[in-house]
Length: 468
Image (tube, rainbow, N blue to C red; front, side):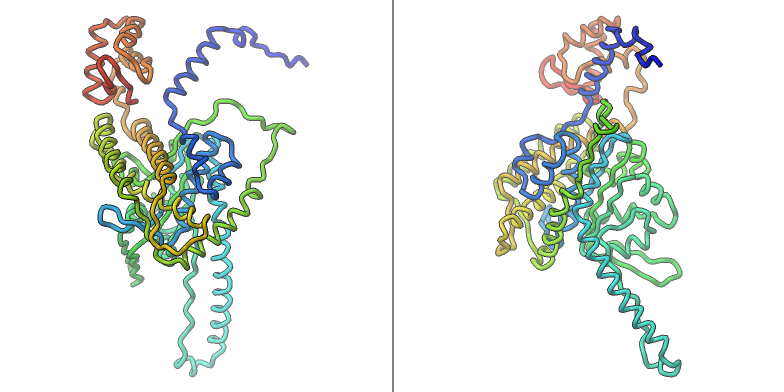
């Protein structure tokens, strides 16, 4: 049987190769940024070692983002002041990528906290055995004597991880029993489908938990009133662009600005998956010592008690100046709707810095000081991560949740906008316009119009950058 290619003309076509090259160049222009490489050398040892198991690029980035998020739910008692309010370390993360793109590496972040989950499961089993034994004795007690004996109450079982398909009541009850909980779901539509049900509408719980705002719940007809005064919840989700809208329907939803987004398109190349060329990597075995170490760190935070994190004064000044600039810049590009993304990023960056600082303390094994101050290294890392996450959030805001502002353009005008590179000068735009039979004065008119409505940003005289 002849297995040689049957489409030699297509394979050898120069125009086809050029089209593929143009497509890849457009993809690169529109791709979201990676975390800066230098930060991986600055990370605390725990993260530096574990990140080294993963390939550079999206795999390593996704694992770092996931690990930081899981760690944020494993540091009870660590807190800081922000804008006059007390916050703890809990982060919200959403990894968005197409199916089979490699976002599954996020699950190894969850693996790090499995020993903590197993610890609670074992304790729950012991509680259940005691309860069942007490109930057996109670039931064996003669009816007359039961009048003078209290019926045993089922204990409050504790779990670090809360299933995404929990009912609203179950979700709140599980969270109320823990100093800090984690909602981790690698298929975002599981949470999206749950939130649509009448019995599980806890989107408001997620919004309040980010800010540690008191949540009250009274189940109809049960007389079971629950109130959590300081809910501490970490959320880590991954899914496809389509699954995102099942959880956050639009950019105006308050959940949007609470998340760190990491979005990418995936590798266009087909990985080796057949036979001997597909080699399994024992990530679980490699990570197991670090998972056990996180359990010890978690237990140390429990006994360490209330620990305050803060920036150095010069770091506060630098952050204030930077966030003022970011606010001005992004509002000019995207409008006032993105203010909440920048404002909440200031909380997120502080949470990240606090996590890194606690890891340094763990590394040095010195717990004498309950007031932890950010180091220069961790300041640089947190800043780089914050800037990257903001870029990803803006990308998500424009591409997936906001109506495409070019929809109303004529076909020629739309093709012209799409043909412009990310950064360009007026003469380049005029040349591209000429190819589409658009006159120079019309090109300049378009540029002026797009600068006003935020589709391009004027960087300097005759120099522009596309916002989309």
